[in-house]
Image (cartoon, rainbow over all chains, first blue to last red; front, side, top):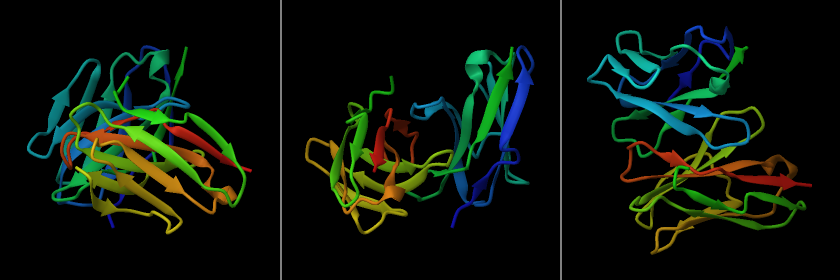
Length: 112
Length: 112
């Protein structure tokens, strides 16, 4: 089955620093990737997505990078704020699949 | 607010009982997904419906069942409940299969 994993289960950063959250995926047929943010007791919230025909996509303070050669995805958060503290999940959608496959998540803690 | 509505938000029930969780997808979304999230765990895909028809099945127990009604709302039925069924159950929806999915706030189920 599909496997979406994360290099680090936890990440602590100082407020104002940039954060990088990494994700490895195993299915080379995946053509769509999404990052979600989940705050405690809440549902996962869509942050940013990227399709396999792109290497990079930028949003507001966030950038997603996709390296298809090594099947690696990363989420960069600029000027990390306390409100960014949450668990971040990457998810992949293999071509033709009917659902997303989620990684186990990385807990980001922002230190004031 | 993602536009996905789930009820009830919290539910406490005894082992052996049966509960029904309800989900209203975002307006215009035809696809509904159910996920289970245990404490500090990732999102486990249970089942997906598209326009009333089952499209994909994940790690859903035989004691669990779901359906999507003509008005596109969905229900997840959990029966013969066990302590290990205590979890957050998320509903999510998307316009079409394989596109970005948006999550509700979840239903907290506690089995005692």
